[in-house]
Every structure is written in C-alpha cells, then in structure tokens.
Image 1 (cartoon, rainbow, N blue to C red):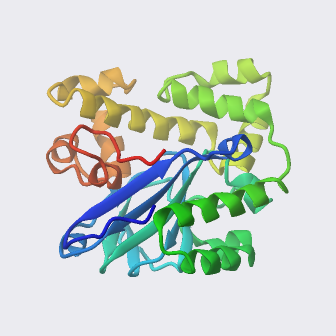
Image 2: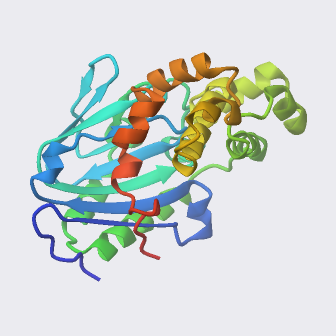
Image 3: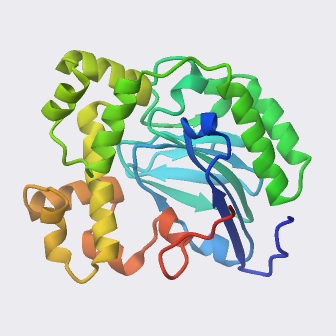
Length: 289
C-alpha cells in the first residue's frame, strides 16, 4: 500500500511490531513518518532519554540535533540517537521522510558486535557502528517508494543481520525489563538478588549490553514513568513526583529540567516531545499492523 498523497502540512505516521519472533528479541518497533508543508519547520520537537536506541534513516531534508548545552550534530542519512544523558531538540529544515528502528535497551548490541559502553552521549552515524552494511540498506530503501515496501526491506535486512548475531545473556535482559516495568522504582539490590550477580558484575555486563549503568537506566525509567503519569493525570501535578518514586518535588524538578529541558508545568502546556507530536488526540499513535 503506497503512502497517501500529502497536502501542505499533512502527516502520515505508521508503526508496527517486527513480524519475525527473532527480530522482536532486539527491536520493539519500526516506523515511517512522512510530513510536508510549512508546519514542519515551525516545530522543533524534543527527544528525551528513554533507555532505548533510536536508529533513523533520513530520506527527506537534513535535520540537526541540538542538546541542552547547545552542541549540534548534523548526521548522515543513517544515524542513531544515543543521547541518554539529556534531551535533544530536532531542528528540521523541510520535508520529513524518516524510517526508524526502536531497539530494546540491549537490542543494538548484537548488531554492533562490541561493547555498548561508551556509545551513549552522542548522535552516531550508523556506518561508524555497523560498517559498510548500512550502505546496502540505504540503497535498497532509495529504490522503493511506498511505505509498506520500505518497512519490508528494513525488516528483511535487520533479520538477516540478526541471524548472524551472538546469543544474548538472559539475566541482563531480565534485569533491564524488571527495571523498566517497575518504572525505575525497583531497588537495584533486589535486581542483583534476582539475577544472582554481584554489584560489580551486574554493572559491567549491563553496560556492555545497554551502554548504561543500572542506576542510570533506572533514573531514565523513573522519568518515563513520571511522564506517563503526567499525561494520564494532568490535573494532579503536585503528586507526580511522589507517584513516580522521587524523594520530593525539588528532586523531581531538577531531574525534569535535565532530562526534558523544561519544567513540569510548561511541558504539560507545550507538549513538544517527538512522541507527543506524532500522537493522535487520544494519545494513541497511528499504526499499521
């Protein structure tokens, strides 16, 4: 099915789960966004840390990432956002035509085939992480016009690469999932007990697979949980810090400023995160099954 014809300012967003069980071990979602018109350059959405790795293949106009300290990245066509320590603003320059892969916290490691420790903190060109394989992907995508075809090619090549990957350590996967599902509130001592690993061993392997320490990953998940609560209960601002497991409102406000780049009240009025921009009015995203 081809993308619908877009009028000025219109947008098409499709996403789906990977169809092959093996790929679902590494990838949580693939998506395709097409947007045109004056509205594109009028909005510069933010991406905030979520503990996942977001790979982007930019088939449209160039865009720039700007972090909270004003540092700028103008990456190549295929790149990955590994800014897990603070937010980035996306400065767009024209037509948006983006394909994306959202990797699980551990999901990029098997494709990189090296430790992820040292990857967080920057916007990486994918050729620096995956080598020449990325050129084949870009070439095949450029030859296909419709959205279904692009998503199919994306899955096909990812699956081919995944079949060559090493097995993952299930204890580290379980540790990351427990932390995520708890919204970052699970005590790390309990995580270590569940996987029967020492503090040092858990941290070493967790960084190898995710690039983050268990504590940093927990902090990110706590903020993600707070954002979910704020969107669900926007009229209960004073309780969000407590519900999300923060010590007090002051700690919450400082963490919010660092990771989201604004105050909780301004976030609720602006709703300028990338995840907000491509949501429908009811808070759900347009999907293609």
